[in-house]
Image (cartoon, rainbow, N blue to C red; front, side, top):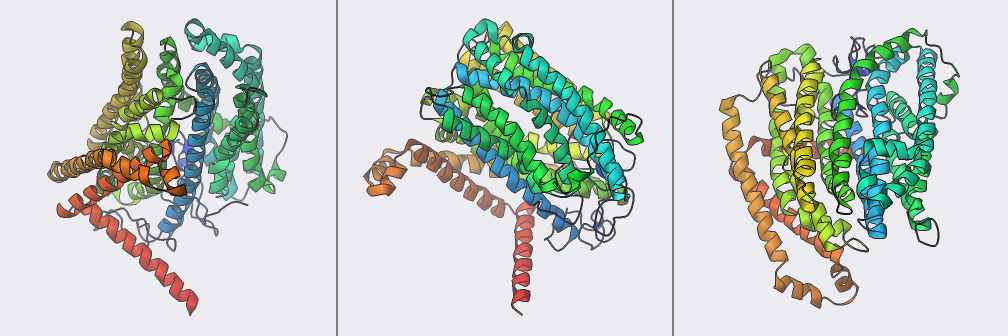
Length: 638
């Protein structure tokens, strides 16, 4: 049973572009059908380009997502109304995907914590990070990010034209060829894991025991690649049928299976560390099953065919080809920085520590900026097609200001609490305070780039909505190359080790994203009249003041919570409550909560005193949402 929306323009965006930038489905160039499905053109718009897009189907009014006038006309604010409007339905679908992603990320943090506390930050953790996050995921993501944005528009083109059987015939051809190629990769991975690891990492020279375990893990995981990668196609199919929750929750099923395997069979008397790889193997099939069950009726249309003469399949190949260059380079960059370079470090556990520290940052970025960009993307496409570039620039400028208003103070607060956050999540068992503090340091380095990373997510959608693909790819390749050179020079040439190596790689990546975003905004402003100086300078001055107040309040709260008086008070609490708050993880996470509350209060108070428009917009939106909800309840009681 899937959770459905009445419009095709929900999230469930396919991954595409460069460096994990995602492209959500938008409407095509035909009117919406009676169910609100988008017309021909699907996720890529009428011209079949991965980023092309027209207006979302079912949009209200002339250029307005709410049915009330042009978005880019008199009121340049992007509107995200309640669930009764088309824009509200898109927002609701985004909330559904956000909920699924929150569950998946929480499960991911639980899994990382269990691995850290069960096996520590030693050879087992490094072996898992290299085998799964390095090699296994590398093969998966190359296929996923090429297939997704090319497949969905073509499938929807035939489905919305009334040819569902033809759409499934095309899907069957893609799936069958995908299975054949995956089986070949699986055989190679299972037969020669040492060769693959030897070509892609220096782990065998620096940590022979970790290399041996990584080889064993990779061999066990290999059959799961078929199910794991095939789930990319089922993910797109579920989005095509507007069943967004189960599409997004497939990763959650995988993590649940892995967690259960480690908890049940991870002890030394049973499978030991091999429970990780067997859990991932089971999780890959659990993810695919999670996707197939909601489509059990539609799967009857599947056909066993490899007909390359199918016209839609030919278009699919043409769309896949140009995507591969940027995707492959992005994956090579990630593997080079996070696995190859770190495998040259002699200290144990650095690969896993980096992965866990970056995971904290990725969780924050993946949930909020991604959800906002998916919600905004159809509106950006609509404004471009109907209201022109001037309106697009105004709406994009306000959206960028909103993201900066949220994430500049948030990054300051997160940087201040990175250490207690990491210690509250990871410290315990075989992972000591020193390693947990290093995880916090990695997260702090990445938090420097959080506001820019959030902006990049939205700005990339602006490039995609105007069908400009070359500039973001060239900029991405350039800035990624700089991060690779900086990481290699610091670790391999200079010989940075331990904390110094972790800091060098994290800062190199974060600063490269800062540079990438600034270049993207500069290029975009050459064409779009966004963020004019007369508006941007006063806004940035107010934002700097609000962020400084947030940081000072957060640091003050951390000092107060860590004072001896508070420690004495907590130590004196009796019974179960006292036992709970005296647990290290509760103490650290309580410190984070107190600091976040203090920083958030200072941020809101400063924004109010400075009369920042973004606060007024946020309050007005909440009031409208509450009024609509009360109106619904009142109508039900009549």
